[in-house]
Amino acid sequence: MDFLKRLFGGGSRGGDQGALYLYVRSARTGEVIRVRIHLYNDLSQDESGDGYHVRKVVVGEKSFDRIEAHLSFDARRHLIGGDVTGGELVDEAAYEAYLAERSGGATPGHAS
Image 1: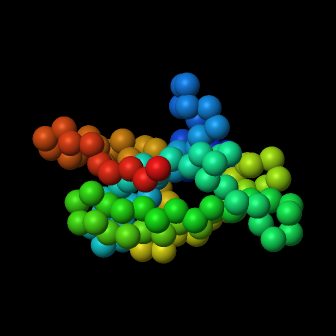
Image 2: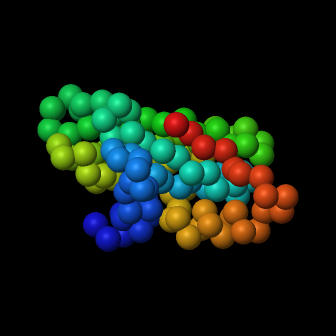
Protein backbone atom coordinates (compact mmCIF):
# COMPACT_ATOMS: atom_id res chain seq x y z
CA MET A 1 0.00 0.00 0.00
CA ASP A 2 2.94 2.38 0.50
CA PHE A 3 3.56 2.17 -3.24
CA LEU A 4 0.00 3.29 -3.95
CA LYS A 5 0.31 6.15 -1.46
CA ARG A 6 3.50 7.35 -3.17
CA LEU A 7 1.96 6.92 -6.61
CA PHE A 8 -1.19 8.82 -5.75
CA GLY A 9 0.27 11.58 -3.62
CA GLY A 10 -0.79 10.18 -0.26
CA GLY A 11 -4.45 11.17 -0.37
CA SER A 12 -6.13 14.48 0.34
CA ARG A 13 -4.40 17.86 0.42
CA GLY A 14 -4.95 20.23 3.30
CA GLY A 15 -8.61 21.24 3.32
CA ASP A 16 -9.51 19.03 0.37
CA GLN A 17 -11.00 16.22 2.43
CA GLY A 18 -12.48 13.30 0.54
CA ALA A 19 -10.21 13.80 -2.48
CA LEU A 20 -7.44 11.68 -3.96
CA TYR A 21 -4.88 13.09 -6.38
CA LEU A 22 -3.17 10.98 -8.99
CA TYR A 23 -0.80 11.84 -11.79
CA VAL A 24 -0.73 10.56 -15.37
CA ARG A 25 1.87 11.02 -18.08
CA SER A 26 0.70 11.17 -21.69
CA ALA A 27 2.26 8.44 -23.82
CA ARG A 28 2.25 10.77 -26.81
CA THR A 29 3.64 14.05 -25.46
CA GLY A 30 5.09 13.24 -22.04
CA GLU A 31 2.84 15.86 -20.41
CA VAL A 32 2.14 15.06 -16.75
CA ILE A 33 -1.35 15.96 -15.53
CA ARG A 34 -2.71 16.05 -11.99
CA VAL A 35 -6.13 14.43 -11.61
CA ARG A 36 -8.49 14.93 -8.67
CA ILE A 37 -10.83 12.09 -7.69
CA HIS A 38 -13.58 13.00 -5.24
CA LEU A 39 -14.07 9.85 -3.19
CA TYR A 40 -17.74 10.48 -2.45
CA ASN A 41 -19.04 12.11 -5.65
CA ASP A 42 -16.98 10.48 -8.40
CA LEU A 43 -17.07 6.81 -7.37
CA SER A 44 -19.75 4.37 -8.50
CA GLN A 45 -20.52 1.15 -6.66
CA ASP A 46 -19.42 -1.95 -8.54
CA GLU A 47 -21.86 -4.68 -9.57
CA SER A 48 -21.00 -6.92 -6.61
CA GLY A 49 -21.63 -4.12 -4.11
CA ASP A 50 -18.29 -4.87 -2.45
CA GLY A 51 -16.35 -1.91 -3.82
CA TYR A 52 -16.28 1.10 -6.12
CA HIS A 53 -14.85 2.15 -9.43
CA VAL A 54 -14.33 5.34 -11.40
CA ARG A 55 -13.51 6.13 -15.00
CA LYS A 56 -11.78 9.46 -15.66
CA VAL A 57 -10.99 10.87 -19.07
CA VAL A 58 -8.03 13.20 -18.66
CA VAL A 59 -7.33 15.80 -21.33
CA GLY A 60 -3.86 17.25 -21.73
CA GLU A 61 -3.37 20.99 -21.99
CA LYS A 62 -0.46 20.92 -24.46
CA SER A 63 -1.99 18.77 -27.17
CA PHE A 64 -5.42 17.84 -25.82
CA ASP A 65 -4.41 14.18 -25.53
CA ARG A 66 -7.17 11.98 -24.15
CA ILE A 67 -5.97 9.63 -21.45
CA GLU A 68 -8.45 7.24 -19.86
CA ALA A 69 -8.02 5.99 -16.29
CA HIS A 70 -10.06 3.15 -14.75
CA LEU A 71 -9.56 2.85 -10.99
CA SER A 72 -10.86 0.31 -8.47
CA PHE A 73 -11.54 0.91 -4.78
CA ASP A 74 -12.49 -1.35 -1.91
CA ALA A 75 -15.62 -0.92 0.23
CA ARG A 76 -13.81 1.66 2.40
CA ARG A 77 -12.91 3.72 -0.70
CA HIS A 78 -9.23 2.81 -0.58
CA LEU A 79 -7.54 2.51 -3.95
CA ILE A 80 -6.76 -1.11 -4.83
CA GLY A 81 -5.86 -0.95 -8.54
CA GLY A 82 -5.96 0.93 -11.76
CA ASP A 83 -5.34 0.91 -15.48
CA VAL A 84 -4.52 3.81 -17.82
CA THR A 85 -4.98 3.89 -21.61
CA GLY A 86 -2.97 6.44 -23.58
CA GLY A 87 -0.56 7.09 -20.76
CA GLU A 88 0.82 5.82 -17.49
CA LEU A 89 0.40 6.48 -13.80
CA VAL A 90 3.34 8.34 -12.29
CA ASP A 91 4.09 9.61 -8.82
CA GLU A 92 3.90 13.14 -7.46
CA ALA A 93 7.68 13.55 -7.83
CA ALA A 94 7.35 13.06 -11.61
CA TYR A 95 4.64 15.74 -11.67
CA GLU A 96 6.82 18.15 -9.68
CA ALA A 97 9.77 17.47 -12.00
CA TYR A 98 7.56 18.12 -15.02
CA LEU A 99 6.44 21.45 -13.53
CA ALA A 100 10.03 22.42 -12.76
CA GLU A 101 11.18 21.84 -16.35
CA ARG A 102 8.31 23.79 -17.87
CA SER A 103 9.15 27.37 -18.70
CA GLY A 104 6.82 30.34 -18.43
CA GLY A 105 5.17 29.27 -15.16
CA ALA A 106 1.99 27.95 -16.79
CA THR A 107 0.09 25.33 -14.81
CA PRO A 108 -0.65 22.05 -16.57
CA GLY A 109 -4.25 20.95 -17.05
CA HIS A 110 -6.25 19.08 -14.43
CA ALA A 111 -9.24 16.79 -14.63
CA SER A 112 -11.91 17.21 -11.99
